[in-house]
Length: 326
Image 1: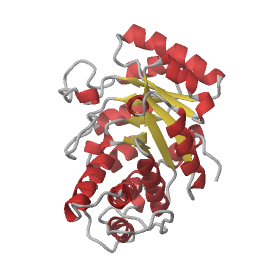
Image 2 (image 1 turned 180 degrees about the horizontal axis):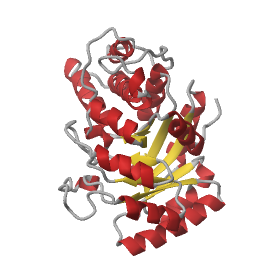
Image 3 (image 1 turned 90 degrees about the vertical axis):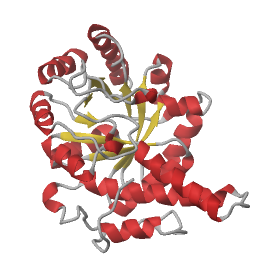
């Protein structure tokens, strides 16, 4: 199906009081796993490419963006492309011609006044070129190896009144807020401030975004969506599934040299995580039975060469006991 637009998916999710899962892409296997998992879950999804991922690919945006666009258009669920955590103005300017319908412009590292000015200018550019612009107010720790922020550190929690004023002054279309999560967590132990989320949702007229969701347990994610978060960003959880699966495949076949075998195992593992988390994020609490599952249609496009997709399908249909999502 044609590429979906992030703005449309966000509006639909917000109106239905559901979350919209957004997963980070580093390799083609990530993109394939994300759409396969979303097909299994039966949910819309966003493929996100970060500035760091662009840097990993030699600073070249178009090869990965075009590959993601092809994968998205082949998906059986609505899929949008989003350029994430952009600090480089030139990368922002490249977004319209690379197939993206949305960009997260990240000036949160600047002082408040500078963040506001830079973000307003980015929003002007984005809107002139038909892009939906997301910004961040507050500090979500853990990015680029930084430690998580203590709860009472400056900027560790986004102030609702300040957030409303920031949105009005900049004209952004979505706002990432600091409510207790942290980037790059490999354990799911984060506790979110749900009362703050509700206050932010009441004060801010645009969809709210959660960064650093990989470290947030299922119940916390579902409660955060119920409190008012809409776009839920997930990245590290995929890598935490991919890497052990590749290691296990290589350990089982230490003489293997063809990467297709072990990359397929990693891809399957990521697809299972996507299916599970997409169901958690995109289901209204009333639709989630005990164990946090709802029925999903089987996915296609990735051969079931291992157990990861079969397990995810069983979990989605309530046939397996709840397990860790990665």
